[in-house]
Amino acid sequence: MTTTSTTIRQSDLIESVAAALQFISYYHPTDYIAHLARAYEREQSPAAKDAIAQILTNSRMSATGHRPICQDTGIVNVFLKLGMDVRLEGFTGSLEDAINAGVRQGYLHPDNTLRASVVADPQFDRKNTKDNTPAVVHVELVPGNTLDVTVAAKGGGSENKSKMVMLNPSDSVVDWVLKTVPTMGAGWCPPGMLGIGIGGTAERAVLLAKQSLMEDIDMYELLQRGPRNKTEELRIELYEKVNALGIGAQGLGGLTTVLDVKIAMFPTHAASKPVAMIPNCAATRHAHFVMDGSGPVYLDPPSLDLWPKVEWTPDYQQSRKVDLSNLSKDEIATWKAGDTLLLSGKMLTGRDAAHKRIQDMLAKGEPLPVDFTNRTIYYVGPVDPVRDEAVGPAGPTTATRMDKFTEMMLAQTGLISMIGKSERGPEAIEAIRKHRSAYLMAVGGAAYLVSKAIKTAKVVGFADLGMEAIYEFDVVDMPVTVAVDAGGTSAHITGPQIWQKKIAAGEFKNIAVTAG
Image (tube, rainbow, N blue to C red; front, top):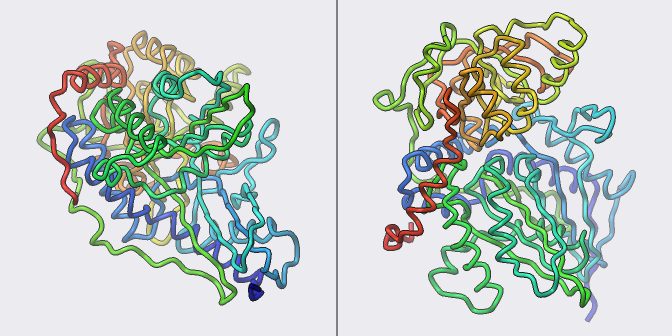
């Protein structure tokens, strides 16, 4: 049987990739929303339930407002299955060049500008490429006359928690996963999913893990019908045991840490068992389409009816209002880990590059561009604004990356509180306790929602750093949780401990989850 040859034009591929990147920046995959809605319904931890409510509300806002789900719009991964009967027409360079042209077009779209997060070279200059190129491209030649394309944008929070190990053939994958997941902290923004690759070689195992995350989330359906093979049995076992760790949404403790566990395998050397694990965060972003030569492909928008009727709003009864412009250490001393706050007033921002530059300037005795005395710093690299926005989506980045700078900032700059995502490590917690400071947590995966609390934004230092510059935000009722209080108590330590014990006691086994 002969296969009819098809022609795919460079311009159509560029347009399709650009459109897909725009699409996944503001539409969650609907399978993720369905499973997260069930997790919200089942969740018994108030802190975790509130975090999931923010994520769901943010997701619907992004879908209607066509702005990014998360400020970290990722590094682009493209998986191509190129039919051997496909003819490529009008290509002015390589296949990768065409993909990068699509990335450039997608990220620089004037109505929904995405954040340039890619730096080159990775070791020395680390200069922003300004258009998020280059993408990471994988090409497979397969029988057929179509071009199968999977586009994913992987955020640093989840990718940075990837793990890889060479196990002995007799070693337990389950034991390794359960030992490893708690070491990943909450910077990968649970609830999400785990992709696990087993077999092949070291690099193949990692690729398998990555590819497994592109599959539909179907754990609810799997639990309903039961496993049909050993792989599905292992998926269920890992799903139940990882959730029993009690890590919960945003690491605050709760019933759901993962919505699904995916496993992909490949034959391996008899003496080997390479295993890789990559988490996908609450801002899961990927899409799949097939080009058949008929022109560019545009994905169909999901119906807004698929989102649950969850509308997070500030809780003025339970949350304490805080005036950042008149904040004192005396007031901070009254906050306790787990308290929810609504912040108003002016805050400064700063991420890795800004902290490193501050460190260098302090070492040289140079004056800083801004005064941090009695100020709060927000660890964020926002998306550029469009239209009438004060700032684009501006969710928190992982705070542990700033741990090594915390003592310096609290001791030498007059800073009194910090806002970020996920937990703090022992070094930072000790500095917070010593200086009677506090660390507050905003919800990762709720960037568009958080940005609506920011009424004005201006760059006040290190403008050359782009999204890593120091901004001053004027905020109204920005929601945060006290993650580390002035006494050094961490909600990311106490919360999972409490919920792991509660889950082990079996009191939540009979909570039903409807089909939804």
